[in-house]
Length: 258
Image: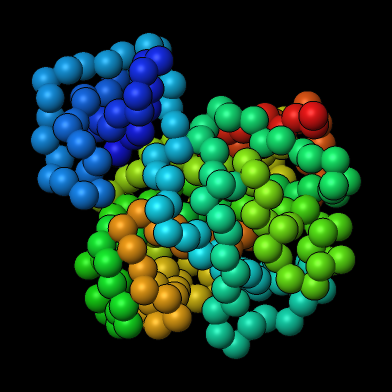
């Protein structure tokens, strides 16, 4: 199932995406599928009439994982972590597909980072890796936008990763998705700049769920960003970045400076 959060000009609603490409449409569901069983309202919304929003706004937290691909760690001149390297991102950083990523004047060096995002489906703590699937609601695409100059200057990643609009998510949450070995391709203005596979993660999704749930109580809607493959680079005003994950979808956002 592909769960979308969308609007037609009124309050946000949820629905199940049906069909593909130009023939896609949304079957509206009642309530928030994270908290209530999926139940259709009988209303059909054409994709052309809807604006997709971020499929989830975490009520609690986004947990980022750093240096989770060996090739990315190498290109940044870093050693591989022996345990998952975690950082927190505020939910005010979240935007949806098509929303602009705003480059503020306090940073002059911003990078894209295409990633797979894991959406937690229920409250949990100390989840063993072999039970990770029991607490995962689904998956979506993410762009872990990073202000490199702030990252270097601060010595930690809160501002660099957590500025407003710096965490695009979307286009929907796919619940029946196997993340073990899928391609992640990032394009900047149509040019491929990242091309990796999730099988190359240092720590796979079950291991990350176990590690994160040992550190924090996970709540419904929490997001785990699983790291980025090699090829990160700068993005500037007027450019567009697309993150495409095989079998999942494509997240596309323009970057603007105000």
